[in-house]
Amino acid sequence: MIKKIAVYPGTFDPFTYGHLDVVRRASKMFSMIIISVAENANKTSLFNIKERKEIIEEVIINETKLDNIQIKGFNGLLVDHVKDEGAVAVLRGLRALSDFEYEFQMAGINARLSSEFETIFLMASENQQFVASRFVKEIHSLGGDVSSFVPGTVLRHLESKRK
Ligand code: PNS
Image (tube, rainbow, N blue to C red):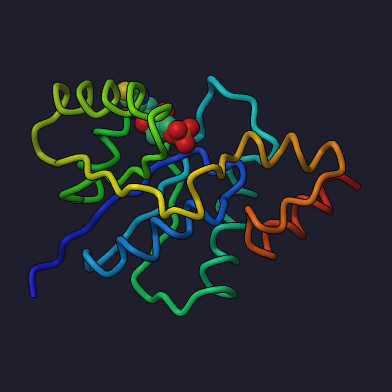
């Protein structure tokens, strides 16, 4: 069987049910999904890179039966990371219209930088259309209930961060 690897990059601050939905669906199409957590110097994150990777690892182990997932960190250009991993595709989730322009631009720029992989979009499932990490952080910091947006593992980490 030909091994087809896909990289699923993102900030994942924090990892949501929307992200998990993309991972679950894509894991049926590729032999390996690498969840690639970006260091992302342009954004101030709630969880540092080490914490974000550990949280995702816990979610995959505790809350799924998936056995073709790896979690890695990356720094620098996505196209270089994709090449290093030997991946044939980059995965991105797409919610409604608001994501389109940014994703369209990013996919176009990456295609200009490298023609060795395709960017593949999975439309967010109906019940995940409104989930966004930045809203999760805001709602949780203001005492709101985010349990329908993030896995239990992530919720526990958000709680301990708040304390
Ligand atoms: O979850 P996010 O924040 O939407 O993910 C954005 C991410 C990490 C995929 C993007 O910022 C990225 O690829 N960063 C790596 C640096 C890079 O390659 N930039 C050029 C892409 S246009």
